[in-house]
Image: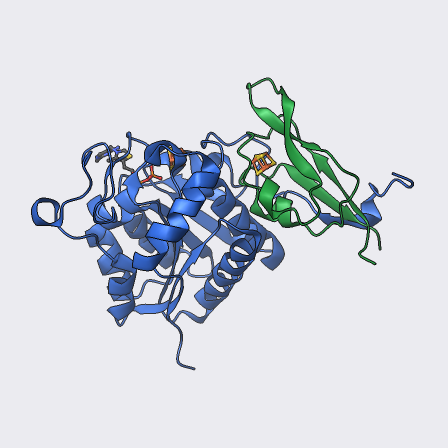
Length: 71
Length: 254
Ligand SMILES: Cc1ncc(C[n+]2csc(CCOP(=O)(O)OP(=O)(O)O)c2C)c(N)n1
Ligand code: SF4
Ligand code: SF4
């Protein structure tokens, strides 16, 4: 079974570009309906399926995501 | 979620401290941010934060010095390789890099680029090629593709009247002074990891004093191209990569 992971999203840094979304293999993330103080629809977790693969964090231009994976 | 996984021992990825906490001014989805981050991660992993000196260009990345927590200076438009030459010659033990767009490196700075590489200055040049002058409003650059629309080629670049797109990276690879020349991208997790390995290799080569290393990153300019970030990355794959193919162009002959 894949390891379990989790992410922390720095809402104020996110620009809602959506580049990370298609690279999540488990559909954990999506752009949300709420906006941050800059008016961007920031990234949210929509499922508890994260495996901690780091794909989203690695492709994010704005260093928004911190990733954790169980040891 | 049954158990809280968010604890220090489970951490696998966080923003490197070689990047400052300032929110970057780049447009949403712009590859400049990703390129900054992997360069900063390399500096972090090599433990050379206090040994690194960067030179920022003119272009969208003119404020790059705000985002790297290393010593940096600003060069006049296109002159970064000349400034970096001076810095590296005065401090031969330092790691010196320039960070430049295609307008900066391949138009106004062509002379500095070619001659620094031909002299074999021991610097790393990180070259962001988005096919356009991003900062000033999406004008045609030397790298603009045939048929590609820009604000100064609204019907697409016409080779007859506007000349051919320039593969300056291939040109640099021909010069005896260049040591390692490669073309990468940062639009998928896999390409980001690869580009980072290339930057790391280039940074490590600097210690050998064997010549100039140039890492081109073919990138997007969503605003200039007038596309969403995801569309721009797709357009880049379909249109930029056939003309600017990814991969190593010159590798050291050990
Ligand atoms: C000597 C001089 N000429 C022209 C300009 C105007 N100018 C500013 S940025 C730029 C082009 C930058 O394009 P590029 O290097 O491709 O970087 P990008 O903005 O696309 O990242 C130009 C022509 C200037 N600042 N200084
Ligand atoms: S790639 Fe980064 S900035 Fe873009 S939506 Fe994802 S988390 Fe936000
Ligand atoms: S104008 Fe283009 S190059 Fe400049 S920050 Fe925006 S997307 Fe990036």
